[in-house]
Amino acid sequence: MSVTDITAIYSPAVSWFYDTVAADAVLDAVSDVVADICTAVADGGSVLEVGCGGGQFAHRLISLHPGISVTGIDLSAEQIARANKRSTALPLKDRQRLHFQTASALDIPFAENTFDAVVSIASIKHWPDREKGVHEMVRVLKDRGRLLITETDRSCHLDDARRFARSARLPTPLRLPYLWMFRTYVAGQGLDLDDARRVIAGQDLVDTAVQRVAGTPFLTIAGTRR
Ligand SMILES: C[S@@+](CC[C@H](N)C(=O)[O-])C[C@H]1O[C@@H](n2cnc3c(N)ncnc32)[C@H](O)[C@@H]1O
Image 1 (cartoon, rainbow, N blue to C red):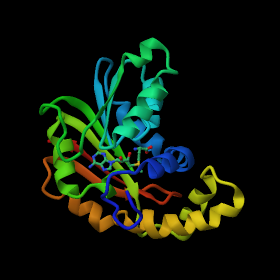
Image 2 (cartoon, rainbow, N blue to C red):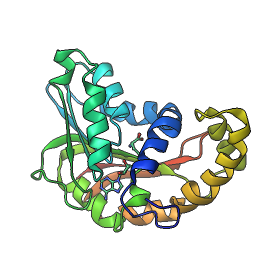
Image 3 (cartoon, rainbow, N blue to C red):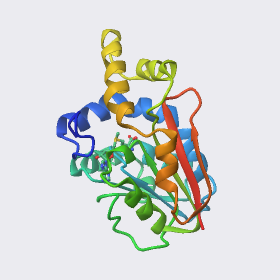
Image 4 (tube, helix red, strand yellow):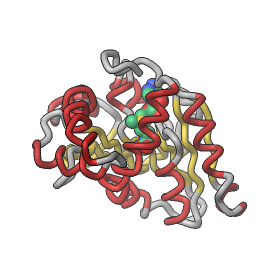
């Protein structure tokens, strides 16, 4: 990813920066909301995370739900290597329920009707065809399976962006430039509520909902496979 082309593959520098500075702050803001929809997944069930990055959310999910398995896919082989490396710190019984592989959201390498829940965090803004990616997520969901996507909210409130920038792992003097970068290039290329409604319109989903995550610069897109 370059700052000007949000759909370009993550460069080593960008993936290092995201993993080191931003990932924990993003997950602190939204991972409870995403993990909540996975609580309905019964023991023996499975969750797919699309655009899993360095695997931090998948790790949180595995420890929250000892009965399920989690698969993470990401376009960047470097991010997948980072996720696999991170997994070596887990106990064997957890590692056995976790699988990462390089793949695109636009061509998910699994059969229809495979997963009980399919989620994605802060990735959809990078997809060159967001509707196609959501269509792929819905395709691999089981009937009545849950979909949840979170992304930066282009129309977020300044106070929420400021609070988020303060939580990034950066020395204080760098937080103001980071806030500017976040508002301009990250949230600035994210989705607003209308974009979010557009990407789920016409998908094979019921009970759809688009909403802001209160107190954060993120929104969620949720639905249930028809
Ligand atoms: C901002 S990071 C979020 C990573 C992770 N979800 C997290 O919250 O820590 C966005 C991720 O989406 C991945 N990505 C971008 N385009 C993608 C695509 N077309 N298919 C799958 N992953 C993609 C990037 O490689 C990157 O790891």
